[in-house]
Length: 216
Ligand SMILES: Cc1cc2nc3c(=O)[nH]c(=O)nc-3n(C[C@H](O)[C@H](O)[C@H](O)COP(=O)(O)O)c2cc1C
View 1 (cartoon, protein in one colour):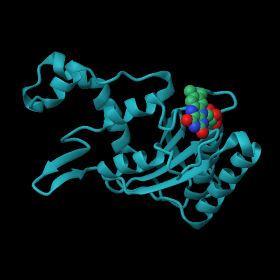
View 2 (cartoon, rainbow, N blue to C red):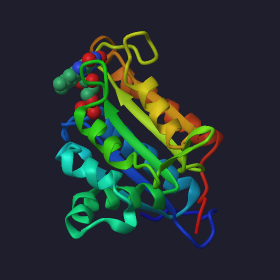
View 3 (tube, rainbow, N blue to C red):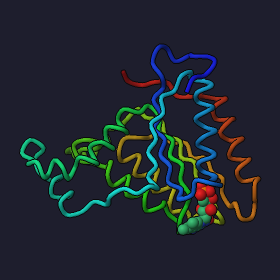
């Protein structure tokens, strides 16, 4: 994706787009992700987008995965390396990106199971966080994350929103502290106004600031 002005130098901004809506047609969160990424491209210059549509399904962690993950990386056998291969690829994806755009509905007051499965695959001791004498330390510092969230009736930030506080917490656990939440919430009552307001929030946010490439 190219834009008219490239203010980020010779390297494109690397964006990881994570979609969690089961819907493609009519998905509010996917529409908002399109808008945000187009806005980033227009401001930051060229962007390189990797797409991870978790709604297509990701494996859940299982006993083999857990055992392989606990084993000393240098002592893993072929089967253990195989058990972690998918997770390794997802970890590479998150590490390589400067910016993550997580587009997610609220399902049953939390994140969709597919997005939880993605987090379970990328939260890896030694790779994305580590244990120190002072407690756990996240290893993904420096990323910028946009969370684009849509709901039917749940107010984002209210006591019954178990999605965005959890996402902020688990991202922080991985070292990702720079998290912007943009909500198109209560779509049942607000109709198109919910999406329009979130679109305006995206535009205003990008007007103020946009992320730069953080690593070579
Ligand atoms: C399985 C399912 C569960 C849902 N649970 C909730 C919920 O707990 N709270 C809520 O406000 N909306 C809920 N919704 C509505 C969605 O959050 C809303 O339709 C949102 O726009 C979906 O995102 P999308 O437009 O990107 O597909 C649910 C929808 C589905 C399909």
